[in-house]
Amino acid sequence: MFTGIVEELGRVEKIVKKDKGVQLHIKASKVLEDVKLGDSICTNGVCLTVVEHSNAHFAADVMHETLRISTLGKLKTNESVNLERAMLAGGRFGGHIVSGHIDGVGTIKSIQDNGISKIFTIDMPESVAKYTVMKGSVTIDGISLTICGLERDSFQVSIIPHTLSNTVLSFKSAGDSVNLEGDIIGKYVERLMGFKSDEAAKKSNLTANFLAENGFL
Image 1: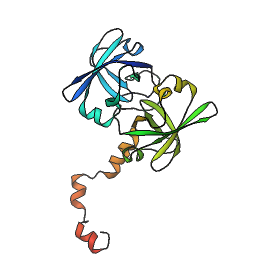
Image 2: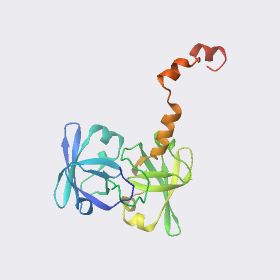
Image 3: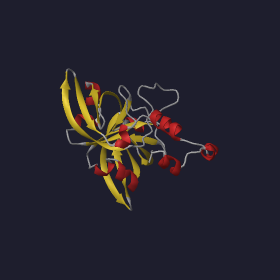
Image 4: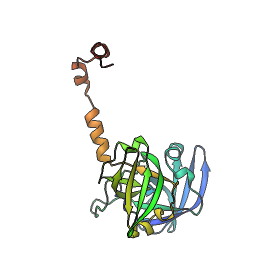
């Protein structure tokens, strides 16, 4: 589990192709201060497991499914990535609960100046849209951000200079893809509202025939 507060920018040293996946080798420093094999490091919003490390880099295997549903498959050597270690139980919780499990890939529609900040407008797929609310939290490439504008298939976030200069957003332009993760609270609410126990299902008198006879189908 993470908080969406990026600790440092890492750099992709090399990408080793493997059967139905790749192994990323990433140069870093701060996130390696107390690293151990098997630790989790959020990389551009994706939770990866450390399988190799030194005092200046770590390696993580990325399976085909992760490459398919995220932007990690588009990474190139020397490209910068957002890095964050898993949260400590006794640490400050500066962002929001981030699982590192991507809900979809969005596209930067526009970037506009707004005083000291920049407004990013992001087009999002339905898999992310259903978990977004005005003033709610969203994760962009592992960064915890607050939604300041919301449409059916897009949202806006305001990026302050500190966030811009310390994350990969400083390298982004309109048309670029970003990893998106919705607020996990929305996912639990969705599951709770839609869940029926076996017992409740057995007691229900609703059938497809009933609904059709009464004009619902």
